[in-house]
Amino acid sequence: MSCSDQLIVGRARALTHTASHTALAGFGRCCTINAACAAYFHVVPKSYDRLAGSYKVLEQLAFGRLLHKVREQAVDELLDKLEPHQQVLILGEGDGRFLQSLTHKCKTPCHITCIDKSAQMLARAQAKVTPTADLHVNFVLADATRDIPLDTYDVIISLFFLDNFAATTLQTLIPKLANHLTHQGIWLLADFRQAKYGLAVWRSRMWLWLMYRFFRFVTDIEADQLVDPTRLFKEHGFLQLERQSFQHGFVVLETWQKEHTQPLKR
Image (cartoon, rainbow, N blue to C red):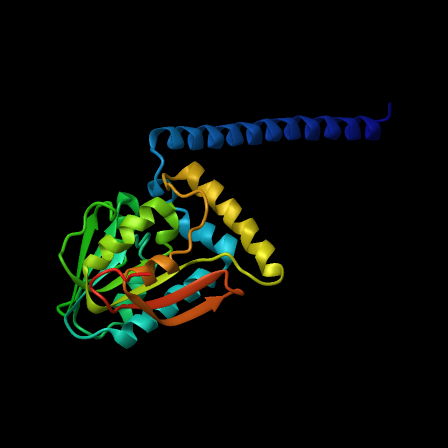
């Protein structure tokens, strides 16, 4: 074997040795990451606490800026109707992006109560907000199906909140919350819906199937399928003032007004 051949063989052996160690190191890191994830999921119970740090990234990977657009539109809708010194209840705010935009844009003095049962989500929301003399924000760690701090509110906001619940829970939750809303009070909601036309039907079915499997695996939501609450709102004295749809009806933003103090008779 010539000197040049020996040099080539030597380099090949060196590269093989380096590649082997690199592969083993990569495999080791992968195992370490998997073990860390498994340990984290084992320690943290099923809840939105598991997703607090990655929720925004996951949302953007799945839907781009769609839900951000809906939140911003919801802020504009609220500011158009908000009157001075009203009481606002936000249900399941999550990591605080709606509240951050609201407090940044709002020039109307008001009192906001933000309820979430995820301590990690609530902490992130609180970190995004700087209260002012005219804008009071109260953060409450609670389950909205059980505990509502005040007796009455002028506005209720639920963005991507009601779709966490099964039909049986919504049948009691919506009238319960309605009792905390003043006469002619506003309920602003955004949620997913099953599209009804064209290819959007299949797209929405696929996404809803994936989302419910994912969230039931990672968090403690009770719903395993989407429930449209429109009938319940109408039965409990609400009039729909406005409705906007996005992505062929896959996401809706609705404004309801409480018109009756007692449930309507069918």
